[in-house]
Picture 1 (tube, helix red, strand yellow):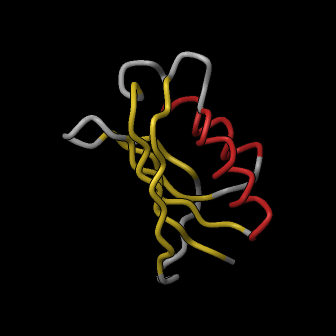
Picture 2 (cartoon, one colour):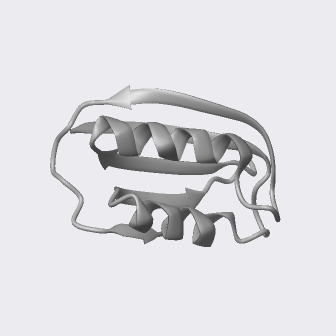
Length: 89
């Protein structure tokens, strides 16, 4: 298992980015959360197997058709208490 934090910059708020991210995460069996940040970015905390995480990272580079992704920053996180679902906050 692997846990990461992605911070996605661009036109990512107000374009259903969180909803599309949740849908993609469920397709990939990823647990975690997605939320808007006050500075206009979207933050994603995701945990899953390595292959699923890599697929999510690739998807986030482009995002949904409604969005414009300029940059995706990623850091690895320590695994602590496991998520039980993927939720929008």
